[in-house]
Image (tube, rainbow, N blue to C red; front, side):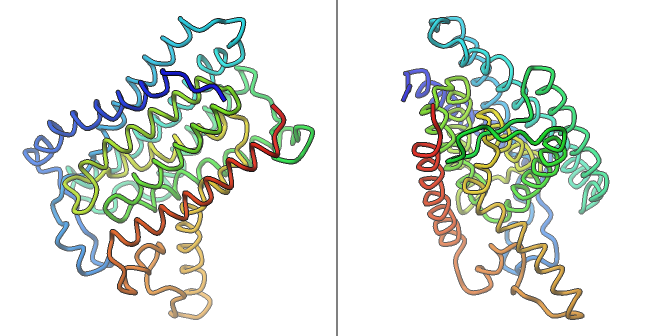
Length: 342
């Protein structure tokens, strides 16, 4: 497993940059009254969060983007190309394409937050507007990957040969990316929840990429982990700042980018298990509500609110969900270690 000092540099620098930006960003968001509006249908006790600064995801977007770019380019410039030729390729193509995917989704989130906060339209962009923009960004990302030599064959643990789905691969990939991005967005409902889950997801992506000797992806994932940790300084309960859709859509793009960069989007199943349960709970709740003409399957969805309504504190929900993420992260790593031939 290749795990150079660059990995620690990437994580520590992103943590520091993100946390320091927060020192200036949070007071600024207060001054310009960029506060979160709490919707009526949410838990009643969340009303105390009214006015908490939002769009705080800007701090880790800057940190992750700057440090990833610097570390990857510096690594490429100093690495022995005879040893790291394939890794260098991924540094300069798939990593930056993935970063572009995340930034574009973050931009969609920024527009959504801006409409909510400045234009005073609580729901921001409509669902259709979001989906159209997200699919447009995702298709552009997949086109770039195809142009850079990313084929339609993917690796699946314990399957000896790479599975080639042909052109159908791109349809599946587009639906998966948009679905996961929105799942991560829906997960952002409690102090520290999205940041904690994405920290652990990035940590295991870092370990897996390092095991596979994809050093560019390792540095990318390390930066994401450091950025999430730096944001949690400001977002852990009680939150001084929320990431907003700006941050959550960016993180959704990041999670997908990491999976595609190591050529194993199948890992979004174990490493995105909590996100998928969150969006699944919403789909089940809406479907059950319509089928039963008003009955509810959960006390409230997404499912983190259900556990809140059951009496769990925000810290307990975040802790338990994070523990689940760690368990499935270990499973994902073992699947790769014993099921993928390097």
